[in-house]
Amino acid sequence: MTILLYDLVGRDESRPFSPHCWKATMALAHKGLDVSTAPTRFLEVPTIEGGASKSVPVIRDGDKVVIDSFAIALYLDEAYPDRPTLFGGEGGKAMARFIERWSQLTIHPYVTTTALTDLHAMQDEENAVYFRQSREQRLGKQLEDVVAARDGGLAAFRASLEPLRSMLSYQPFIGGASPLFADYIVFGALQWARIATPYQLLENSDLVAQWFSRCLDLHGGLGRKVAAAA
Image (cartoon, rainbow, N blue to C red; front, side, top):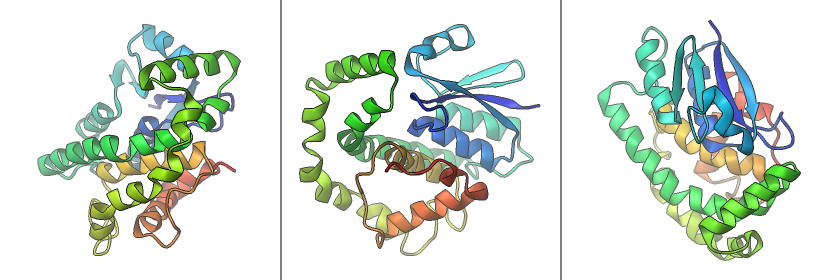
C-alpha cells in the first residue's frame, strides 16, 4: 500500500522546502516504502485530513493518520520493523530527541535569518501575504530587517556547529557508519536552507558540508532531485 505524504510547497509544487517534511521524506525512503505526495501550501494545511493538524508533515498509511515528523518516524519503525531501523533501539530514540532540540535551537533560527525573504518570494500571492503577516507577528520585525542580520551572524553560526563537525571527523554519519533518523533531522534543516536561498551557510571544505553532501546522495540521490536555490 502506498503511503500518502502531505508535503509543504510554495508556488512551485516541484520544490518542497519544509525541514520537517524533509525529515519524513528521508525516513520513508530509509524504510523503502512506496510514497505518493500531496503538495500542500500554507493556507491549505488546516484543510488536510479533515483538519487533523495545524502543520505538516502528515502521512496517511491506510486508515492511519500520523502527524509530526518525529511521530512519523516512530510510527514507521513500529509499523515496519522488518525494514531498516530509523533509531536502532531506545537509545537511538533518546539521542534523536536531543538532536532534534539541538537542531531547532541552533540551526533553525539562523536558517530563518538567512532565508525569510527568499521563502516569502517562493509563495503565491495569497500565501505570501499569510507568510509575511504570520512571520512578522512572530518575530516582531519586518522580514527584511531579520535577513539584514545574516552576515553578522554567519561566523557564530558556523562556530555553533563545532560539536557536529568534531564528531564527523571520526564517523561518516550521526548514526555512525550509516544514517539514522538523527541524521535526517539535521539534514532537513540544511536542506531547507539549500532549497530556499542561495546564501552559502557553509564552506565546501567544512566537514558538515561534506556530511550534508553524503546525505544528499542517499536513497538514490533523493535530496538532489530538488535543485539548490540559485
